[in-house]
Length: 393
Image (cartoon, rainbow, N blue to C red; front, side, top):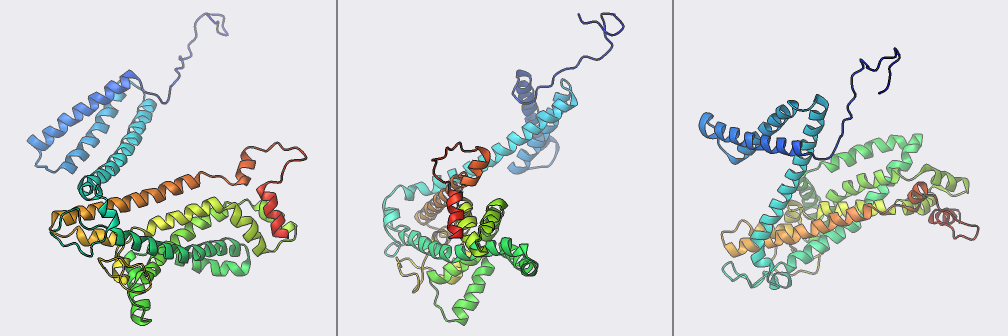
């Protein structure tokens, strides 16, 4: 036994207890289960016997709130206040995550359940709806024309929006460093932020009024791609601006010190360094435009045949295909609409997963910052050295 300063073997100082954060104990599991069961019984009593409430959403919301309250009260009876707050925050975080996952799984499962009757047949992906009537069997017709239209419209919109978005992002970053350019950056930034919150139908009306009605361009996939460009360009610009700002200033200073001009520095140093992030910005913009319905409806029209010419004639996209057939009173048509939604969902998920994977790639500069390379005198130059050499040359 340790002795205190006065030589006695006892101490008046309170004993310190170590608080373990994280992990799951038996008491915590039992307390959570008891709070869940008690809150469910109390919620049922309030909804069925006491209060004139009804509805599944209100029942679940009231159950969740009662669970949190009972869990906090039961935890306070056996733990200190800090532990109760920590475990209550853990329960909130886990329940919120499970709720989001449950909602996503419910949506995907419902679309899969309603559209599997049509999607399991190969003709749905190889045929069009040109010779298919409303009462024809599910083995007739498909969404080939809608898939081709979506790919063509999205491809042209990407071709238009990516250069404009990247150039605007570079202008916002580079021109803001000068006194004269700072005056132009503010209105451009305000315009980009306003376009980010622009409703999609307004973009479709703008292209319809300016391009189709004023300039005389017929409704086609090209007109729809212009409307999608209006929706995609601010997304690409905002994401690309963030990525370009993350380029280390030392690389640009080294390029200027070696005699390179500003545009050479941007072309050979800034853009190659920010290439993975720019790719992610492009994919996010594509995911934004692939699911638009109202701009395509106003500018591309609707057709049941395959139209490979995006500059002449009406052209259908997957969102428009779903919107047109899901409101019909025929079960097979509704099944085809849900199968089209399942196809569109798969395309969007692929785009977002691609953006997630590409976002994990780090530039050579980031890898050298986190883990210095051990090179000898005969080692090959890095990508940053090659970029600086190209900027000077």
